[in-house]
Amino acid sequence: MRRFVDVEIVRLRPRRKDPAGKVATALAFNAALGDPQRSQPSVQVAGTAGKGSTCQLVAHALRAAGLRVGLHTSPYLQAFCEKTWIDGRYASGPELEAALEPVRPVALRFAADEAGPASVHGLTSLAVSYNSFAAAGLDLAVHETGCGGRFDLVQGLERALCLVSDLALDHEQALGPGLERIAWHKAGIFEPDVPAAALVGEGFEVLAREAERVGAPLTPVDPAALFVAPDRLRLPRLGEVALPGPQRGFRARNLALAASGLDLLSERWPLRAEHVAAACAAPPLPGRLEEVAPGVILDAAHNPHELRACLDSLAAPGELTVLLALSGAREPASLVAELPSDAHLIATTLELYGKEVVPAAALVAAAAARGLSAEAVDPPEAALEAALARGGPLLVTGSLFLIGRLRDRWFPTRDVIAQGTSWPTR
Image 1 (cartoon, rainbow, N blue to C red):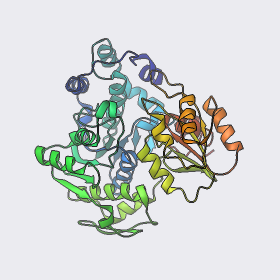
Image 2 (image 1 turned 90 degrees about the horizontal axis):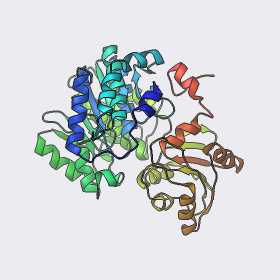
Image 3 (image 1 turned 120 degrees about the vertical axis):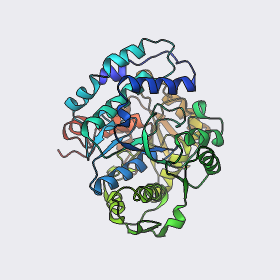
Image 4 (image 1 turned 180 degrees about the vertical axis):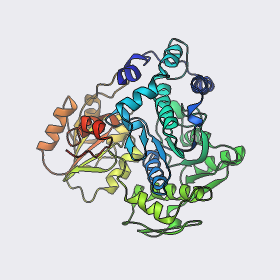
């Protein structure tokens, strides 16, 4: 199944740039399957940073409230099944095969259109989750937007809530140039009369303007106003929420957004303050500021904004070793510029089918221009051994594909698949 989705229907030639055509293709693809994405109300989350973690918090809170919940995030970290989470576990191989079966002929038909402007690989992956959710009889589904929102492949949902997390400069080739244009893309998920919430910060004015234009009631989220203490939130409808521990930095911002969204949903769904607290106590999204061994942190910070937030969250890192790889059309200097001046960089190169990667040598050159200590080590597994051999604190960061590949050392992928969780027991 994974070979069919990730290799056989992947188009290696650049697609025709036609944003409106891309949306039309996504809607037609879904319609050919009977529009399974409309099988239940959905929460859609867009943003540059924190959208995956926000999705996770919302899904856990809804499940704590006794609702049957699905969660779709993308891309996956270690295994394809991670994109399809149903009531606390990843879908099994047989469940995913059953969900893919009716999609195969549709995917092959759309893939045969050489002029098609949409990723059939991406549409197929989404459809597997849509069909899985439809078969499970969910109360609600939570969907992470892929890139942007207005012209993203996630289309045609029966939206119950829209959320927008922090905005920053990223994917400018597709969404830019500039933050205002990026915000305009993210605001594309807003829908008339569907409640929405967004973090106050750069680009919020654009979000507010677009929400007013389409008639979406938008709630501004200011974490400083919601947190009455580091371990306590006060929400307009749910009241005071006692959290399991203090929340700071980007974790506090993501939680404030998720809690505000849940507060809005409480007008329709049986949510209480303790359900928000339960979500905060649930396991976080893997590969995001995750300590897999003493002093070893995995964090998929693939743009300067995210890397800055990650480094700010590390407690007195000292002489930090940073293992870094990048995918996509990213400028190495912008990431390297965020590293501490005494950090040692170990750069490595990913091998991805049909995707652009940044060579390790380019990262080393960017580090040398800054006067940083750096070396290139390939492949990623050898780079990890070299990084661990140095001792001291280690941050593995950059592409999500790097994080997923190396996380296998501590949480074997075969166990993630077999046990349906990112934290399998051995």
